[in-house]
Length: 503
Image (cartoon, rainbow, N blue to C red):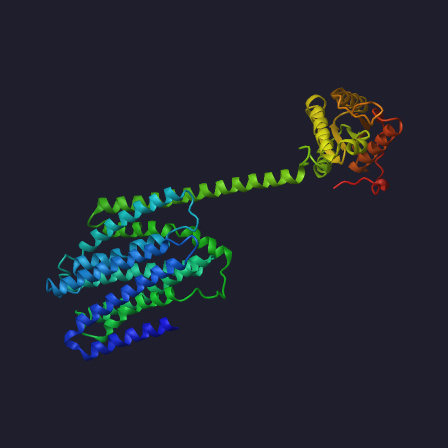
């Protein structure tokens, strides 16, 4: 509230001073203009300090724009006081009044998270430099350093200023309305306040004051109109970020953010077309550069999207790995086993039988009691290395079922082949010769139950799982360290609620 009071007081002082000091009105206006510009620049520095972390460097681009405007005003004062030139549109000051939008245009055209930040900045730098050249050529194709030679030239310059101020006001407003981050909202609020106010006050002043019978500063209280943009920026930059009561649709936010890098290129294209009548080569170069710039920025954005999609895909795969991998042994876990069994069962055109081996480590509780759980974990890892390295076939799927139990899915494998595979696995584990004094065999051994089933539409994977479980139970009842085969799994849907489960 204090900032608003200060701004109103400055405008009133300027108006009153112009009304009561007609002879020194020009000096009063220049002092007021430099004062409000300095206040705006100080508020921009304050806003930069409040932003972040990290601090928003776009405020420095806005500061550069204000500095260029101040240079233009200094050149205007030089024309009036040093060169005694009363022309309303001297070329040097007009050039800086046009050039001052360039830094903030780069800020408005910035993407929120540019892909290939260095390359994007290089493209923007080239386009900005080219736009500066086009500004220079366009300005001095209308007026000379001394100013406009006729009223029409001054009107053309005024319309040129109106055009760029209106474009910046529109672009800044779009960025302000379509923000989803606090720093963006704060920055574009200040930029929008400045350029919207400047678009209206500058248009009125240029056409109805400077070109309406009052060619010099200080001849009308309307000079105070040019204070308003800087004071609007001062107020919005000094005030704390307000609480937002309206949040734009996410589609609008992403659309404006994606389109914003084209603002700078479209400006180059527009001014390139303007100078084509007088400077065809430069105009064509500008138009081509704008098109190439838009294409390159679009390509960089697409590269960023592809990289982000690839990164998310890898993250998703890693997360799925955590979900489906047993952390102790590195094998697939029970959830992965269930999904693989379902996939094999429902494979299109499935006509081959599926075999399942259920494996249990014999007397493993006694091993843990004697050596401890850490040694038990090492034992399981050693067993897994033996099973994978010298037992399981390439097309088989092995998983840790839980505790000291493992399971092997053997697709397209009939019972005799499955029994041979199971016996080979049992022998491989016994050959590891892991000492186990509490076992009657003296080493760590395994028992395996084998079941197989012909896929049927009347049953499900649970039938196979239960049959292998019963076969394993018989192997343990028969003395362990052996392989037992169950009958062919019955695909009876009434048996789907037994102890084992799928999914």
